[in-house]
Amino acid sequence: MTGDRIEIRGLRLLGVHGLLPEERSRPQPFELDIDLEIDMDGAAVSDDLADTADYAAAIQRVADIVSAAPHDLLESLAGAIADALLADGRIRSATVAVRKLRPPVPHQVASTGVRLTRSRA
Image 1 (cartoon, rainbow, N blue to C red):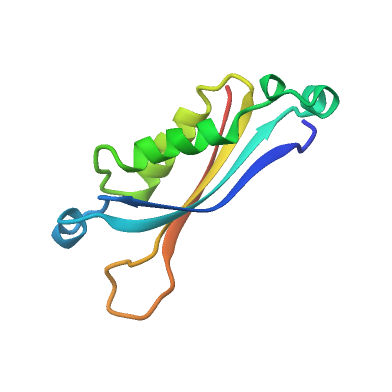
Image 2 (image 1 turned 180 degrees about the horizontal axis):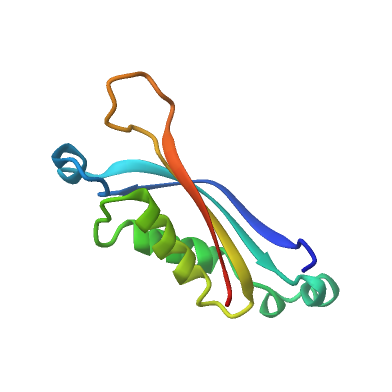
């Protein structure tokens, strides 16, 4: 492993995820950070998108999942995102952080979230 990675930071999307009825009644904002571990040797030499993972396509995959069927838990949502990203055979591992920007708690907090990493078997 080289440590090469594509970083996506601060991706903000709306989705309907959570356990509570108020979380299921309307879309709420989520913020995501994603790291995609990938060998970049070829792209560093060729300067060709075909030799790397397309981060625009990865972002669209994530947006499709966040806007699709609800997940009760952020863990489940993050896992579904990581699995979809690993469908690109060039990606060795995906780390997905999902933050709920308006969590339903009675205290002032900037966000709550999870971070998980999934690797190719």
